Amino acid sequence: MTQYVYGKNTVKQLLKEEKKIYEVLLVEGLQDKEMNDLLHKRRVKVVMFTRKQMDKKFKEVRHQGVAALIDDYKTYDIDTILAAIPQGKTPLLVLLDGLEDPHNLGAILRSCDCAGVDGVILSKHRNVKLTPTVAKVSTGAIDTVKVAIVTNLVQTIKQLKEKGFWVVGADLCEAKDYREGHYDVPCVLVIGSEGFGISSLVRKNCDYCVKLPMMGKISSLNASVACGILLYQILHQRNPL
Image (cartoon, rainbow, N blue to C red; front, side):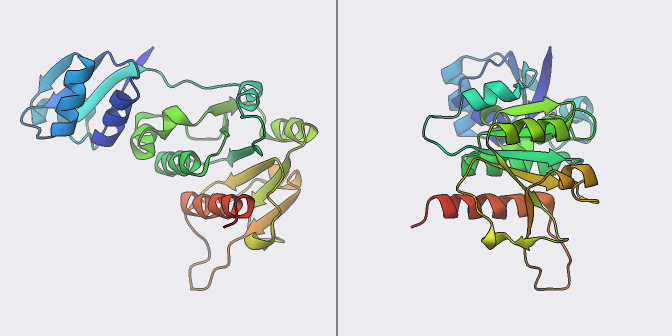
C-alpha cells in the first residue's frame, strides 16, 4: 500500500536518500531551487496543484506546498533490529509506553537518529502509529530509525532483559537523578505517555527509573524534550570528551 507524506524537508530527505517515490505533488509557483534540482536529478513524476487543490486534498495538514506518494512505512521485528546493531556498539533502544501525540513521536525519532539509537519500540494497541504527520516532524528519521510494533510491552521488556539489556524508565516517583544512571551497558530507555507517564506494569519491570530535576514551577517536560535530554546524557556517558 501507498501513502502521502508532506513537508519540504521530509520530501527533500526522501529524494536525497533515493527512496522510491511514485509522484510528487507541488503547488504552482513554489520557489525552491534545491527541491527542483533534486526532482530533476531523480526524474520523479511531478503533478502541479493550485494552492486551493492542495489544501482540499490534505485538508488541515500543513503541507508546505509539497507532498510525495511513497510506500507505507516499514517496521521491523525485535530480532531484526538487534541483528542490525554494529558489532562492538553498545546497544541502545527506546521504548514508548502509551505515547499519543504524533508530533512527539516524530520529534523522538529525530532525536533517536541524531543520538545513534538502534531502534524504537511501540505498542500495537496504545501508541500513536507511524503517520504522515510523524514523518513530517521527524524530517526523514522515520526512514532511518528502525521501529518495531509489539503486542505486549512487558513481555518485550522481559525478552530484552534475557538478552542482557538494562531497562531504565523516565519517571518522577522513586527515581534517581538522570546523571546517576549507568548507561554503559545494553540499555532500553522507557518514555511514558504525555499525560500519565509510564504504566504501572511497565514501571514494575524497569530495573530503575531516572528523573530530570525541575527547577521552576512546571512539574514536567514534554515527552520528546525529556527523551532528547536523556539520550544525550547516555551519549555523553558512553563517549566522554
